[in-house]
Image (cartoon, rainbow, N blue to C red; front, side, top):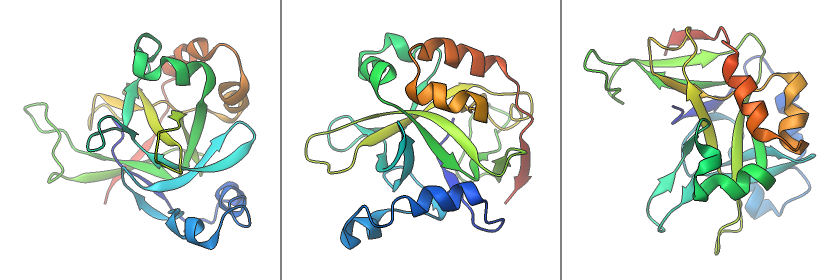
Length: 199
């Protein structure tokens, strides 16, 4: 699963700098101040997102009834769910991050926010998590959900789910291609060796 992630400037990855810079000058100062571009990212935060060929500020979580939010969607079944089907075909995006957080799974199989928190990172300085977005009435920002898959072997000791990650060669195709379900299957077949450390 993915319930929190981070944007970290410690290593100053140029990719993240370019993404955030793309927002500057395109928004009013009031709206730009609402966009979180560093630190720990929580559901409902407004963050920079890659959609099509541009960077767009979006809010994390599809609103269901004004009070509940869906923040993740299972890649294996996303094409079968009416909530996500339209977005899968026409509104795909990528969430840039330095890493994401997970809590150590307890022996009874349940994760807990009070357990040990871990940061998971890739060998590349920036992760690109697969996501879907939509527009919602009354919200000036599009909303997004992060797609999840079965955990890679390097992550399974923490949780049985993880975000779908796209390497550089597949990112453009995810954003602009015509067969997203094939791309999701291909991405799920990869076993990324993520690095984890307690934080």
